[in-house]
Length: 292
View 1 (cartoon, one colour):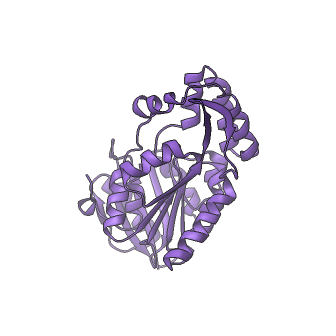
View 2 (view 1 turned 90 degrees about the horizontal axis):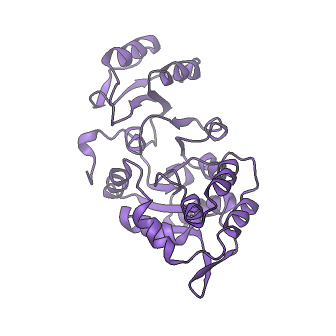
View 3 (view 1 turned 135 degrees about the horizontal axis):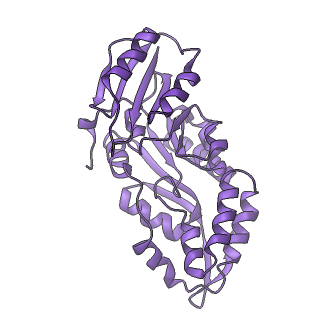
């Protein structure tokens, strides 16, 4: 048995009853259940439709995301999340680079690395090298003035944790940022890279070993083993090429507003919804959300 979930941007809810019923009828689905009026709905299916991606493409044009997944096991026991452009709306290294006067150069490297065009480790070392001499105090200023949480993050964490789930933030960014974001949102654990500071300034070096694609897979393996759960019990979310390892291994791998090359590798693609989409695809209705 499968579940089809349709959802849209909560800031501009535009999911019509006609759209939901038309697809339900075309696919011979069960009764539609509205998780949030105008925002998210689901219905059961006996099998996965052969024209799924054609329908997905047509719904994208009207601002609607579609996810079809097995009903069994869709409620997860663990959240494994990327940070940059996933739990926050920015890339922290790009914001630091802007303060250092090398913003465009670093942003270009970031974009290419996240799209899988560059080796992650080498690209990170190159970008951090361009930050050499930046006062470490700038990190706090960037956190206070430039970093904003991705919409829906508080509800996602509060709701899953209220249901007993474990939450880990695993980023190719920096501990100076993940520790703050993890604390603010309620993550149980956070892992990231370390910027080396000497005499109050960045040395242009990053601590080793570098946390990249493989380290995110390692985190998935280590944390699930520690908790005594399976990888199928995990919902992973990210947007960049370095997230593909964990997205492919987790029970539900969600490409959130992801680079096209990344989204193409994932069965769950959220382009219009926010982080609450990860609750809707687990079957939570809006009146069950916590922390809002």
